[in-house]
Length: 566
Image 1 (cartoon, rainbow, N blue to C red):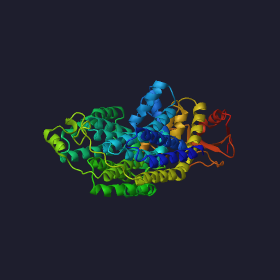
Image 2: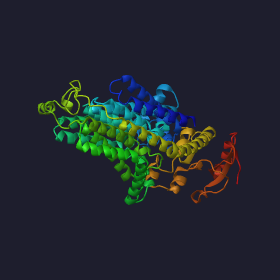
Image 3: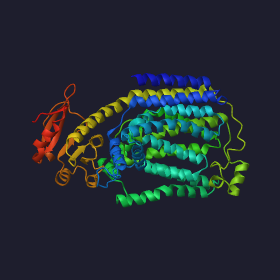
Image 4: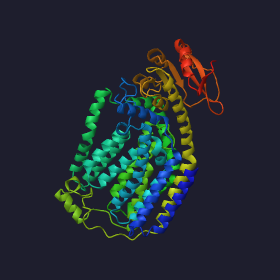
């Protein structure tokens, strides 16, 4: 509750600074710094409202811990299965653990929160770069709106790669705006290595560069060096993956497709529903972006092509989700980059409209293009071919406070939806994950090293249990056979032969049931354990019959878990 009150109070401070200081932002740096500090504070406290690390993040934590501990990029030591799609994030976490000796979860949360705070600042810098400093008030507004984006705040402390991915997408656009296609290619490669939809982002950015080159605004060398910059990282990474795992498509992707709808139309329907729900939640962002596009169509600025790049990236993200099918996690983390991209695009579009500048290539730019000095061929030049060290356009008159009021309303609405709709669902997810963590720690503490445990879900439980337990993941995320043959329980029982089966997707049970799933009824017997806590909380384990008595005695040694055989 304190975090909620604090974020509302800070938002009010941002609102006052935006409205009162709007005309001062262009001439007084102190006002801009004050507004940015307040916006960053909103982003920090906004993340404290959530404080949720979902089960999916713990799968990556186990990989990162094994990387740092010398087992390699594996879920179970000795099993080479690519049960992730965020290699760069896992390496970063593993490196953090190796250097500091800290817990992977703590490192992931700290890095995620830091990425969100940097995102707010990069939004300000990127918007200002697109506008060439004509009116920094719009850049401040974009940063303030970003601080209120619920999808970004929800996944800042999640331990997932989402905040790093959003930051990389913005960095990619910034590199293009800054006229550095080589760096843009490197950042695009990192985005591909951070999240699966990074490939879509990289392709859209490359296609945009080709289109700009075709219009003679940059040299044709720009797309070539962009591709070269991406290849520097992607080629050795792909070669390593094929050598290490022997598969082109990650097992996690195969499992995700198998777990979704059986038909293409069903998957498209799931993805469409996800995007529509997102659009209804963020409809204010979409309306503002649509107005900015309409205005931009009539009164374009020299940076209009960058605005279109931002919009195409946002559209590409939505199309990717529709094709891939809707993710299961709440708060629309898969589309977290979209509101941020729209905030920068809308702020830039309104700024161009307010300044009333003309789009097109001026004489100096045309001469640069003819001379081959634009884009990558001109040191220090922007993609448009101009050097920012040269004379700037005359600063346009500051826009009225109407834009400031729109930014305040947009931020307030976003925060309201975040606090009332997204946070409660994420908190429910946090409670379940905490329970699975408790159960995993219990099993890891008392089961002998090398014990095979089938866990569904496998993330939080396996991360808490530690690498000494061999975890079987029935979802197939970390198992090649189960990824292609979901629900093959005969394989789990007959080939993997776990001593303990845990089937607790919802965390603790409210009562003892003594029920066992049919596919496990023969080789296993169900043994309920009561957890020491207020009210009724139960864990029902399926124990291998030959080991049931021994395992029951071993697990009952924990003071907080008591066996109550059926």
